[in-house]
Length: 558
Image (cartoon, rainbow, N blue to C red; front, side, top):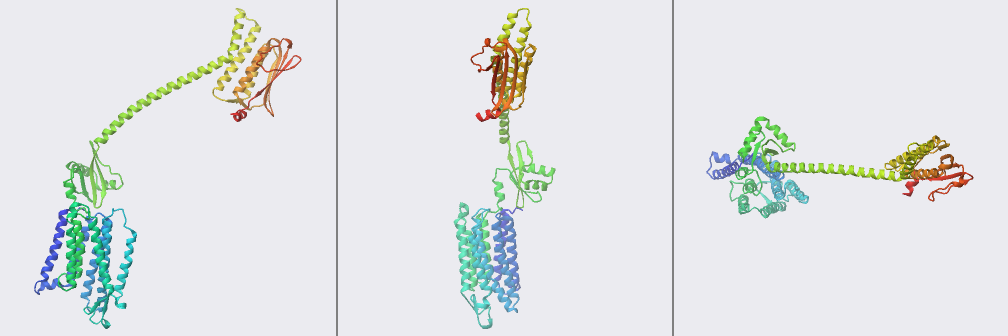
């Protein structure tokens, strides 16, 4: 619900007019109207109705919930005071009860200034910020003062009466507790005024700060006048009510206390498209015809309560038209709608999309370039690998070419057998080198397969040959290639006089060994390259032993 600035002015002026008329009629000579106005029931009802209306107005106008609760307590304490006053004057026969109703007058006189001080603290702090908890310790002396007043019959420190409370309503003296309450009211009210004045930083409001001070001073003057029996048409409760409620209402009117009563001024001077709708979806205020049309169109297409639930869910986005989007957010008493201009955002999104497209194209080019480089690198690695294979088998290829050239058109069986032996080595050593490019280790049986194929080639040439292998452990492929290459050199050196050969691969305690035993027809003519290991010679038999590097040993060495 929106309370406009004009409506609050009308309510305030109406209340002032009623109070002035009440005071003027009170001065008239005795008549029926004056008797009615002088009745406690009429006074209590009139002021209570004004306070209830003010509380309802505060509920709709004040945004700060903590400040709003303090105002409820202040107004409620005065209503409680008027009720006690009504009971005191209408139940004259119950003297003790009436006296305690009189003592109860001082409950709102103690609590109202304290609530006013807390309201001043909440006024100068953000909505989400609590006041210092140490200030709540003031509740202790407040309740002590109330307790002392309500137990006055026991100690008479607030009011002292004649014996047996004879003529207690007129014959009494003020005690120290009364003066403590009086000092309490003045000090807390003065503190409230000082806090409000010190934190009034808005220039137009500061220029009108005298208005609440004047209202408060007028109410205080009426209170003192009533206490001194100078005037009787505004009693102490009514005067203090005018002082407190008039002070806070003046603070609201001059803008010291934030309220929603000036929305129409904001909307009238606001160039930003904003719309306020109540709980039923009715438009209360709008600063843009375009937004109003969009809102009405959306309201016709769907239930406004669904829109409010949509806003309360945390998603403020709404209907979009061209480059405009209507968004909403729930507030106290309704929903606020506004228009977001999406043209700049969409321009940025288009630019971002274009940049992303260019980046994607560049990424595709880089991916293709990387793929091409990977292919080139793979080709280079393949060429390097084939070059290494060629370097290893080059001697065997040269010997094969020499055999082919020397044989001419007719090739003997011995030349064919020699070519088979060279081809077996060429094939097997090439496979090992290619396997080495993918793995570092291989089973020792790979060496066995190489030796067995060479042995099969020798057998086909009529030379007895055999190979055996027990272990299946892993070895370095480099070690297998080294042993097989050395074996091939020894074999080719001994081939002209070779009668038989036996290869045995076994695992010993000190490692895996490959033993080669070759029987020659005449060892005197055997010559091997100086780079080859020296054999153990027994008559016409040669013994060679090669150590293979196991995978675990190679890992430890690395």
